[in-house]
Length: 259
Ligand code: COA
Figure 1 (spheres, protein in one colour):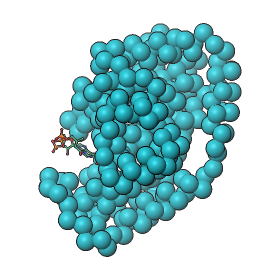
Figure 2 (tube, protein in one colour):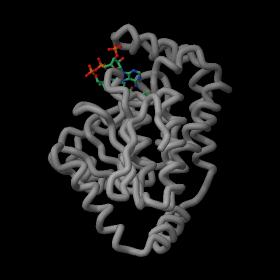
Figure 3 (cartoon, helix red, strand yellow):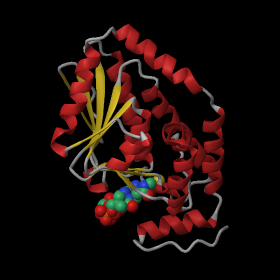
Figure 4 (cartoon, protein in one colour):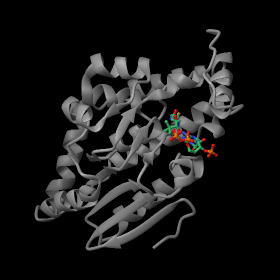
């Protein structure tokens, strides 16, 4: 098994456990971590002894609190687009995995963290989980598929509200909106994911892979993802993104000029 800088991985009883391991940064996804997630998913898919994957975050507080905001500083529009394209591709490889991938959401799932959870086939949230796409706070928009998957899962009405207000929603509301499959006590989180995989394990792996492919084909269109990339890149040409990121780093409220 590979060893990773920012992930902990382990195979137990046919399940590949992938834990994002930057707890001092609330498991924020820097580039290296996103690349490592892609490599780990490839490894899990290739390993005959693995039937499914559980993705979670290290610690009690956060699943993943977003892309690493500090890496967004001074990116050009083109660099921003490349970053988002690579993130979209890696998250797509999760959605396309022929083996079931479950997000065990153990705290904040914000920005890229919400997007990572949405790229998984199923989401189980602990009672302390919170979901949101707060990118507009930074003068930015979701760039790892969030505009597309959130709309698909909870509909335009709520997707627009959450994306434009940057509101965080708690696990019960995420359940009510259909964003997550289950909400459980924090100590039962991994056990619930294992229970789901143990049910899936009794079915034909070929039929599971076919189900995933067929359901993924339900609304296969690249146009929305491309539009997300274009708009994400555009944000990097504004003064607002500089103000948004500086405000985050300086731990103050941003003053957006609207240009
Ligand atoms: N990128 C980079 N660093 C992040 C981060 C992110 N997305 N989210 C949290 N961190 C870092 C903080 O900068 C802080 O690091 P420091 O100790 O070196 O200052 C550390 O993680 C702990 O976060 P902190 O903000 O002190 O915790 P909190 O409990 O007060 O607040 C959040 C938690 C999740 C509300 C807050 O961290 C936050 O708003 N994060 C950004 C969420 C976001 O906008 N995500 C989308 C990014 S595109």
